[in-house]
Length: 371
Image (cartoon, rainbow, N blue to C red; front, side):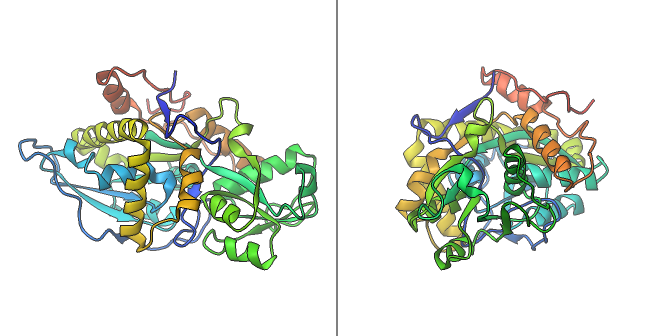
C-alpha cells in the first residue's frame, strides 16, 4: 500500500515538470549549471528543539514537480520540525549541478528526478548518495499540434521535442516509440520520428514558430503549450500500471545521513506533513507554490497554465522504487547508459519510522535498499 496522495480529488492524469522560463530538465549527461541560493534562509522553528546540526542545506528546483519543497519551505512546515536548525535553501536549474553539489559536500539534501538520482549514485560508485523518500509522481504529457497530428499513429514522421538527451522524458518517449515498432537513433534523435532535444524554456517558442510538431514534456511546459493551441494527445501516467511513477525523489549525502540522522528525520517529518497539507488544502497549496515561484523567478505562472498543470502532479512519500528501476531499464535498452547496479540506492528506514509514527503504511525499496 502506497503513501501517495493526489493534489486534488479531481487529479488530471500526467507526468514530470519544469518551469519553462527557468529550467533545463535533468538527465544523464546534461550540462551542469551552478546552483544559486534563495533570497534568504528559511526561518528556524521552535527554539526549544536542538538537533545535531546548526543548519541543513536543501536543494530543489523552482518547478511544480518539486511542490513538496516549494510549499514546505514557503509555508515553514519543514522548518517547524527542525527547531533551532536553520534551513539554507538553494535552487538549481539542472540535475547535474545539484548532484555535483551533493557529491562535492556543498549540499546535504536534495529534491531531484530519477535520471540524475541514478546517474549521481553510479558516478559516486555507490558511496555518496541515498534516496530517502519520494516526493512526486506524474505531470508529463505528449502535446501536439492538432492541425498536423490527430492520432498517436500520426506521430511517425513528425518532429517531437523532449527536454534533453537521456533525461527522464526523453527516455520515456524513446521507449514509447519502440513499443510502436518505430526506430530512432538515440544519439542523434533521427529516425521514424525526429526527436528534437529542446530546452523547456524555449519549447513554447519552437512550437509557435512551427519548428516542432509537438513535445513529450513535463508540467507546466505541457500546459504552456496547450495555452498556445496545442492538444494533449497522451498522458504518460496512463502508460504505468498503477498510474504512478517517480518524477521527484528526496536524496541525501551518505555523510550527512550518518552524522545527522536526527536532522534528516526532522526534514522527512516536515515533508510528510507538507504532503498531508497539500492534499488537505489543494487550492491554498497551489497558491503557495505559485507564490514561491514568484519569489524565486520574479514571475508567477498564469492561471491558464498552473490551473491545469497543478492537479496532474501527485505528491507522494512513496519513492515508487519499482518505477525507478523500470526507467533505468529503459535507458539501458535505448543504449543511453550501461546497466547500473542500483543495489543500495535507497535507505528508507527513517522515512518508514516517520510514517509509522504518523500511523501511515510503510513504503518499499523494491529490493534496492541499503543493507
